[in-house]
Length: 309
Image (cartoon, rainbow, N blue to C red; front, side):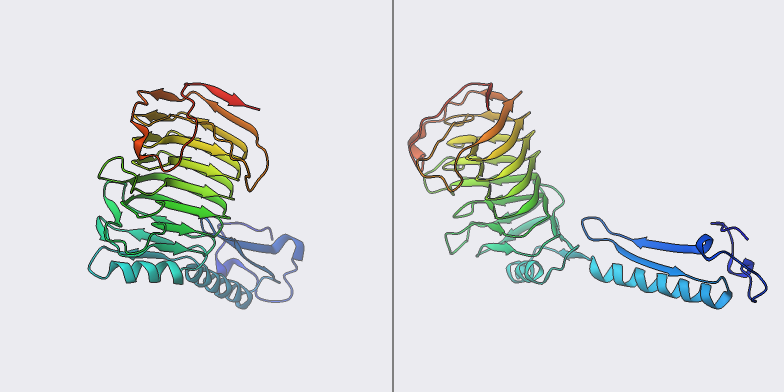
């Protein structure tokens, strides 16, 4: 009897006289979920009704385990959003997605995520807004120190320090994010908008940063980087790649910054040297904002195309 995907339980033999090659009836089920590890279940059986029932029970158990491993966690805005959102980030498990709702989250302290394989997603950068106007400390709005993280579809406003920082992350995505200091360019604004540092496999795309007192998008001491299709405006530096390896910066618009894509070379970088940095097909226009609000002094290089080897 050959294996068929359309066979029913009653079609399988139930007594020993039905001889079947075990190699022809080995079944392997793999349950997987996005952004998480696969969960596999295998069972080699001499076809029979009881064995098939056992196999089905195993499959149901696998589905239950998969569901337990990956959860969608909704955190709507509200008066206690600080505590609920901080708790969701702390208690998240690998594979979870934390969802922000429509509205403004009034936050008094920075947030942090240090769990691998977690996504933080909102409805859109103009709909799901993390507001740090009342932030008490001077740290980042959101700090990520874990691997395989996706941040998408929300805004960070008026953080006292950097907007979103990742440190030591391997495989992190910033997509459809807005980081903004709504009072315009000021020295009191946070230094960096999107700020991955000492990270690997970094993707920043379709995002907007406005009003940073240093760089809107900064990637430092990192490798394997793609920065594409973003807008950086009214920052000191629009987009900055510093002491990093293997970066492509393309399709971006830098406007009304003090400098569009500057070339900074610090005297004592944490990671020595740089290579394979390509900057191409970007629009750098009207980078004319006065630099009086600059948090540090540097030479700003303003031209539309440059590539470093």
